[in-house]
Length: 173
Image (cartoon, rainbow, N blue to C red; front, top):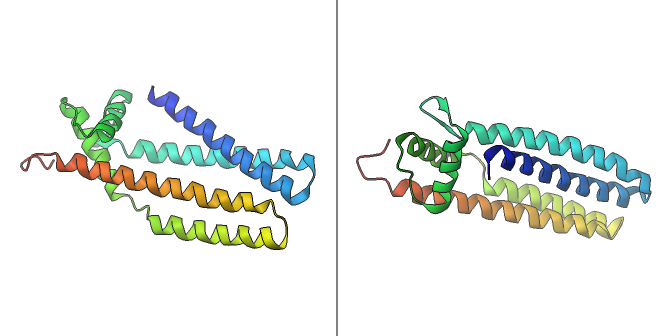
């Protein structure tokens, strides 16, 4: 799949998830069908913001030698991270190694994600007990989504370490 299509698909999924989450939240909060509209608007805005932020983070991760990577080079770097095999072309290899180092150097701490998810889950459980039983859905979301994020983060870091370990001893560049 082309990188631009992948970025567009990621943005659409991001907006859709946020639309559903906020629409359900506002509907459960007010019990009025018209409240789905503000939830959708809030979801679209949040999804667009998160997609743009993610796109910039994604593009910054693919810089080697001071030059941003092309679509082919990014695709090769992602394939190298998935398969553990470095590309044979020097520029694609440099981009793949820079991307692997970027993934290991990111400051995304799984504990931060877990703490925020835990607090959000506690708030949702409290709201479910005191206010509305439908808030159990939010508690489930706040447990499942961060868990999937932590698993994906650890898998990507493990693959990046594996890719960097395949380098010969003299090729630390």
